[in-house]
Image 1 (cartoon, rainbow, N blue to C red):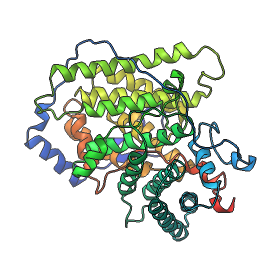
Image 2 (cartoon, rainbow, N blue to C red):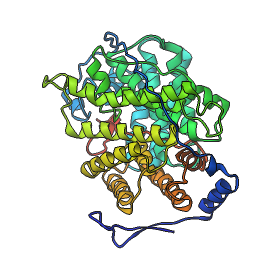
Image 3 (cartoon, rainbow, N blue to C red):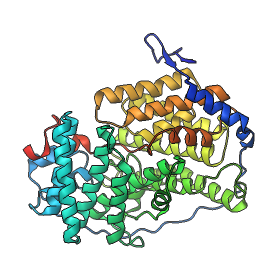
Image 4 (cartoon, helix red, strand yellow):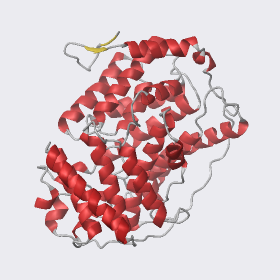
Length: 457
């Protein structure tokens, strides 16, 4: 049993205990008895220059005009917010695709009010109308509506905790099939199309993370996780490297995370220490370091290209620091004492203390790997608890459970024996279905300040 009790500024009342169960001990014994912990080693990476990126022009689907009342219940920048796009797509007419999206939004609204039976009714309606839209055939207008409906049904399953059919990956697989049926992966999109595809991109990358470390994955899941990610970028480089409100980080950081997962290898893999892989890791690390330099280059005081909100900038950097830790600890196989991970963690914990409310599961989960002290662990837990209290519709409960299992293994194995890849694989695979590390950021905008069901607006 590990006593996670505050010795500094983070106060516990009276203490928080991390309980070690029989599952934790048996997992630890299996890891030690097989000698897997002895295969853990770091990796040397040679120097290489990073590659360059090319971006494209803008393209849009839907007009920007909406009544001012609807603007009040959307969040962030209206034109760049996925929530604004949902309203535009759902209120244009009473066609079957529009109604499918409208019903899925109302299902989410009612779920946030804890009206599960009514929410289920609208979920069933959304599925029925979505099937109707697919039967009719999709065009350039109805396809984005079907994609958005599928994503909201995915979100519904994540949040419902019904214990019945809450396998969110089924709906997301369907969403990706719709995306792949109508978009060219070799083309770059922008405008309203980019808003939608960036939303898909966010879910796709974190779906890939879940499947990568969930050992019960099926061949179909592996194919979906490995498929190419649609590029949906603006014409301006600053839009790529700055934080998007709906993503919690810049699209470029998401792309880096996807690349990092492609470089993950088991420690006994013959290619683990191959020069090709080590060079790719080093190039990725160099590009991660370039992000701050690019931000400084564009931050020249112009209203249209600067990061206006300090909190958004901190969220972006927290995601970036988590990615640095992931590359160092999981991809490279470094120990907790690695200076790269320690420096990134120190900066991340300093930001987390300032942010106080943070509902992005992935950075919190990865940062927990590098939580060395009771104070750092308590900061993560207190952030989760504050956020869950302030934003009840979230995905942090399951994240907290996995974090505690991860810490139990770290305590049993010792900080310099715990292989981060083993920890992630074991803890994530303990779930009966792939856990999701996405944030339900559309909830507040769909429901409004008082969680008013969508159809009553």
